[in-house]
Structure formats: structure tokens, C-alpha cells
Length: 198
Image (spheres, rainbow, N blue to C red):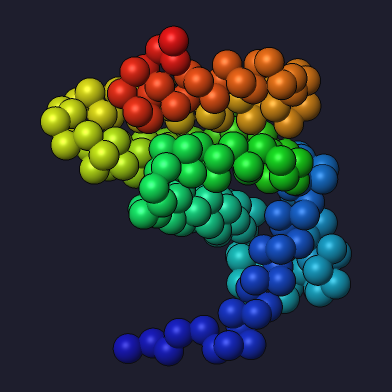
């Protein structure tokens, strides 16, 4: 049986992933090299390679951290016992669009997934689990909804939410109160059973 990482080792690994995330968010995936991460973290390249022997190992760990953190947030939001659960869930997920670093980070993750099969597999698994959480929320609030119908509505909800992030954050468009109001009606319709928002 091998010993797990020490607390100091976990701290160092976290600091290296923090540096990698900063580079990915600010400069993009093309700038995410082992040398750049080592420099940003203020360590020797060999030190970084002790924890992440290759760029693909670093990317796998970074994707796991980013996607797991986001998925944990979705799980908390879909499991909240708020009286206005659909509204609370929607507000919580929409609030992520207010964090420009988070939107830039996900934009870079999507770009990596377009060219890297391992990144694409991680992103697909993330969205599969994200939709499963939303589908579970739907079935919990509408017990008569079939698993297939809940899953379809959940997938449309996730698609709209992720596309909306690009527009609402300013990456691909501009946020407007009128569009936000309509988006909210459509998304609430999906969460509450209407589906078309009208």
C-alpha cells in the first residue's frame, strides 16, 4: 500500500494547478506549457514535472479540478430545499455568468475539447453529469415526469445556459435586461414543466 500525498505535497500541487488555471484563463490553452506554469508558480521545471510529468497529465488534473468544482456547485444548487427551488436554482446558475474569469476559463476548456480527445471526453462526462443533476431536480419536483422527458428538458436547459454564458458575459454579445427576462422565462419554463417559456 502506497502512502498518499503529504499535506505539503497537496499544497504544492494545488499551487501548481492555480498557476495553470491563471495562465489558461488569461492567455489561453496555447500558452499553457509546463515551462510557463513552472515560471508562474516560481518553481523549477523539474519540480513541476515531479507532480505533472507531462502537459497532458497537467491538463487532465486541471480539467478534473475545474469540472469537479463546477459540478459540485450544480449538485448543491439542484439539491437545495428552497421554497422557490426552480428560481433559486436558476439564479444560482445564472450568477456564474457574472464571473468573467469563470466564463473565460470555460471558453478555454471548450476550445481545448475541440482539439483534444481527452479534454473532449472529460467535458462530455461533465455535461452528462450536469444534465443528470438537473433531470434529478426535475423529477424530484415533478414525480410524474418520465426519466426520458426530464433528461431532454435538462439537456436543453444546460445547452441554453452554457450558450447564454457567452452572450451574457460579453464574450460573444452584450447582456440586456429584455433578453435576460426572456431567457429567464424560457429557462424557468424548462425547470417548471412548460418548456417553451410562454
